[in-house]
Image (cartoon, rainbow, N blue to C red; front, side):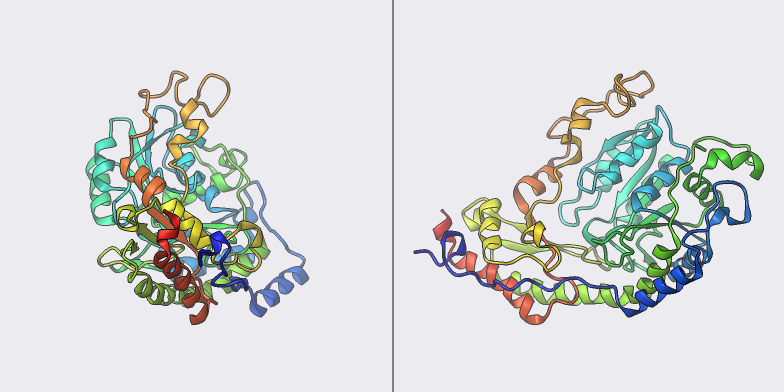
Length: 434
């Protein structure tokens, strides 16, 4: 009988991996203080001194701006909401195109649709997996208004090249830094590299408040527009004296005082938590690089990496099998993570299916029955979403990329050794998988 657990052999490990717990006594005390204050939110959806929120929200915004070295930080109830605010603030609308990544959480691309702009997908880089500067330039038309770049998996985007392209073509750069807090591209933090940056505080991220997001910018006018969009803009502009009402259709994207209080404590822990990820990946990657069919993620020169996930590239020719078969065998050797048992073993073939292959883009319909904004009369052109438009992304997703989360803080060296042992065992017994 094969030694592989996939065929009935003993697993490398059965004990659950430790949970990623960043919430502690500090957050508990902060929440109790807010509850005892009686002020769980102080936002008013009208022009009023409390239009900008309560004391915890304002304190968090000040602390976040100071930590990341920016003029403005704007809290919201999610990073998705932050992206929506950003697209609205730059004045995007029907007839505009926004270049986006196909390999990211869907909101990073569908944010373009909220104000009826059309997403245009550029391909990703071979080694760093962020948007390719060359592919972006190929997609630019006279209708292009912005680029939404994503610091995918914790890797900052190629800011020098992409920002230069944006300047050349008079485009806005919106940076989705949800997966890359507290790491730098040269001497600047990810999230502060474009015109607007967006961070995430949902429970999967490096630090969290359950849900939440924070937008940053050094543009005074964009900051104020995003604050308006966050909090019922249409009900505020007249009394505030705002005359430019483009995209001043407001939402309720407000963060409450409890979330803000938790995030203030979490921000203090962020540098340590990112450093632990980096150290764990350094240790594990050195071991995994001994397996000939695996190439651990590269880090862009001059950059730091936050390692939201640890990425491996798989060589099917060396392994003698498809990646999916190899991953299936590795997963059989390992247990889930504590508190996330229902999600299965956190070793995954690929990441998300290229977004343009989702039904909304394949059918080209988002709002109503007339195909808006893709084909209801305002679109600049008929954008192609056929398979094959982003070949690097498709190859990575369907054939080469492996991602895993078994390198987070609170993993011991023994835990990391068990992860390596699972990959090594499958490699050494790979002939059983042919």
